[in-house]
Image 1: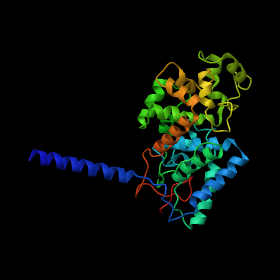
Image 2: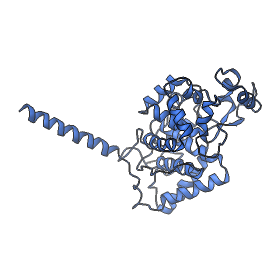
Image 3: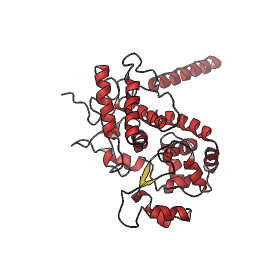
Image 4: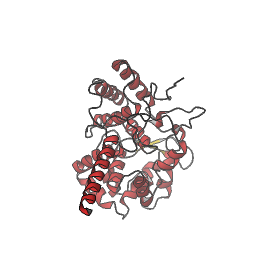
Length: 321
């Protein structure tokens, strides 16, 4: 009798886990029947945007990442401020920094026209645009799991606390990623996305003027374009090849040339040193882990089924009145 009860409990657990997995499952083929031209359209517009401005690839990747760290991957970062929405665009990590919104608007407008109605979520557009940006700049490709729905809320307070800060040390970074269900390998692999793009002076000033674990020649070079006072929005490349997806970001860390405090924290006699070394000499290992971590991050607290909505305008919540 006891063995039968154990067996029944075991079966119940399997069914429960299966149901949970299914309810949260996303599929790369989600739009194949409802709008087969959706993904090729996103790719075409992203490629054109990146061709026009190489920096846009990093911006679109960053939009998806910053979205997923606040409420999950639900396109909350795209919502403009209203009387009831405190926009995440005004959070410290996003204000005067997050960009690419016009590209997302263009994609949304074109897709809805091609599909005949709003069937592709803004959250899925962000996820696919991030992948296509990486590919456009020479990085790996992957099948993006799809089927996310969009939130009807945003949370600037949460954005200020949950988006990893460029000033965090390693323990803070590990705790931050753990909070979102991500481990140390995810932390290092996803940080490798900093192989693309630029940083504002305001976010690197402390390190290049006061850092103790920084290459002196590198610091002097960065000071030329980032004064001690003023020039907060002046830009500096995060690694030597800011428009090419490669592993030079990790090679830089070995030389104490990480631009952010949080970058160099990954190689500072801590638990992530080994991964940084591996990725610095093994670009294939980095690309493989980056893809795995992007897919894992893209599944954080997704809205599926009847939760959320498919926004008609990525900047606004649908009106039901």
